[in-house]
Each structure stands twice: as C-alpha cells, then as structure tokens.
Image (cartoon, rainbow, N blue to C red):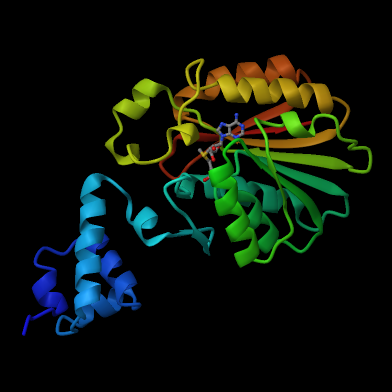
Length: 276
Ligand SMILES: C[S@@+](CC[C@H](N)C(=O)[O-])C[C@H]1O[C@@H](n2cnc3c(N)ncnc32)[C@H](O)[C@@H]1O
C-alpha cells in the first residue's frame, strides 16, 4: 500500500502547493496544514502531480484551480484571461464611493473586461440601478466573463469590440452620467519579457504600443468624440511610470476635465481618475 498522506506528499510545502492540494481534496488551506495524516486517493495524488507540473511550467495557482478572489468575490478564470490583481480593486472602490446614493441615470462601461471582475464587483456591491456594458476584443475572454455573469446573477451586456468601436453609434441621451472603467493592456513588450510572473498570462491582456499607452490614447479619442457633452467619470489602471504621460493625454482629449492619480498600497501611482 502506498502512503499518500499529506505529510508524505508535501515534503517541501509552499503556499502554492498547500492551495493546490486544498483545492484537490475540497478542503481549505488550514485543513491541509493541520491534517498531515489525511490520505489522498490515487486519482487525487496523480492530479496533484499534474498540477505541480503546470505550476513548474509557470501557470499561476489561480489559472490551475480556475478560481480567483477579487473584491471578496470568487471568479472563474482560465488561461485566456488576466488573473485579477488586488490593485484593480481600487477602481471598484472609487466607483462605489462616487455612485453611493446617486439618483442619476448612470451607464457603466467596462473596456477590456477580461473575466468581468470590475463590473461584476461594482454591481454586486451597490444598491442603485446601473445599466452596464462590458467590452473585450477577445472572444475567449468574453466566454469567461459570460460564465461569471451567470455565476453572480448580474445583468451586463457583453460585446466583442475593439475598445468602444461597436458602441460608438448608440444613443446615450437618456443617461445623466457615463462611467468608464478600464484596465487595458499597458505594458511594453520589454517589460513583459523581464517579468517572470506574467509569462503565462495572455499577451493580448498585457502589451500595448506607444510605450504601453496606445490603447488608452485611442480610447480617450473615442470618449472625446461620443461623450463630449456628458458628465463623465473615467478610471484607468496604469503603470506607475506612465502617470505624467497619461495626464498629458487626458488633458489633450478632455481639456476641461479634473484629474487625480490614486496610489496603490505600495504607494505607487496606479489609477488615473478623470471627471468632468
Ligand atoms: C489587463 S486585462 C484586464 C482584465 C480585467 N479587466 C481585469 O482588470 O482583470 C486587459 C483586457 O483587455 C482586453 N483587450 C486588449 N486589447 C483590447 C482592445 N483593443 N479592445 C478591447 N479589449 C482589449 C484583453 O483581451 C484583456 O481581457
């Protein structure tokens, strides 16, 4: 008989291996830490070995177990979407504090929605009625977002579109305010090459031309055309090195706007808030 106890299998445990094992045996991490005698069955054992192989290949635990918590909510994820990061929660916090008790008719547009974590977290955490559109260029990402929308039972219109191209011709007269959130690709290919932790994330979610700012520049141009006479709240996640350049872009396309940079927990410039 093989000894397939946790203690025997996890010779050099790490946070990642604990999490993988906990997921395989349908328990939590504390159980793994406190039950070294627990025996896995053969299927669980071989599945664990397969997961270790994926981990070694550079996949994150979240991608392997298809789960990631964001803003206290569990999202389905896979290799076709960026794994949501804690910094992005700042966008959700900011929107929630801005719309609290608002009586306005608001349209929320999330551009580059990935797994849908931003709009779903906003809708799950506020009382007011928001019309919501989520856009992504990737059909594979949209499939993941669709799964999460169903899982969390929220109403979001999903559209495959490069930036806002597919919704440019719509009529927005009925809305008092437009909120646009975006965590678009903002890294340069050089930054990606030198960051080992993101090698297995989809390139389409990471890299943009013009020193990482091409997509934000194009999006600002679209916003200035369709929403020039609307009350706007815009939140963009950025790389800390881009703050001055993106401020300049925002001033160029929306000359009368108010601008604020919000720092992340590490004290780095992370979110550009634009309001009109
Ligand atoms: C950095 S990920 C962000 C995903 C998610 N919003 C989040 O915060 O975790 C960027 C997303 O933008 C999408 N994307 C890339 N280029 C795009 C474009 N031109 N138009 C719309 N979406 C795009 C990618 O497919 C990816 O899902």
